[in-house]
Image 1 (tube, rainbow, N blue to C red):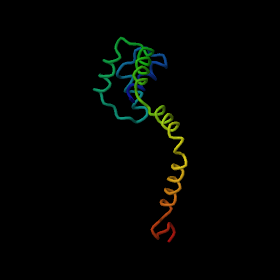
Image 2: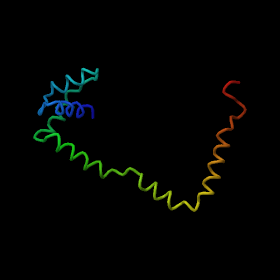
Image 3: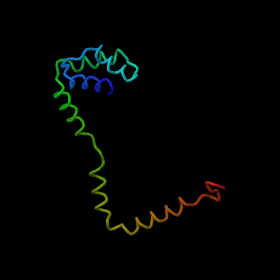
Image 4: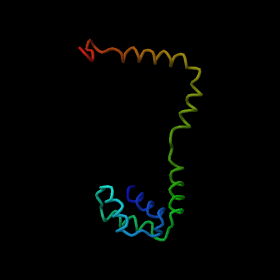
Length: 107
C-alpha cells in the first residue's frame, strides 16, 4: 500500500510516469525501508494505466467489500421489540464489569 501511495503522490505532483528511483526516493524521505521487488511489481501492474483508471478500479473493488453497516442497522430495526430485554442485559453487564473481586486500583 505504501508503494502505491508513493506512486500516486508522485502522479498527483505532476510526474505522469514515476520511476522506481522516484518511488524509492519518496519512501526513503520518510524513513521507510524499500523492497525493490515490490516497486518492480507495482510498476509492472500499473504500466499503461493512468491514475484515474487505477482509482476507478480500486473503487469498483471496494464497492463489493461488505462493511456490515447495512446489516447492523436492519438488525437493530428488526429487534426493536426486544429493546427492554437488551436494556436489562446492558445493565447486568455494567454491574458485572464493576465487580473488581475485592481489588481496587489504588489498594
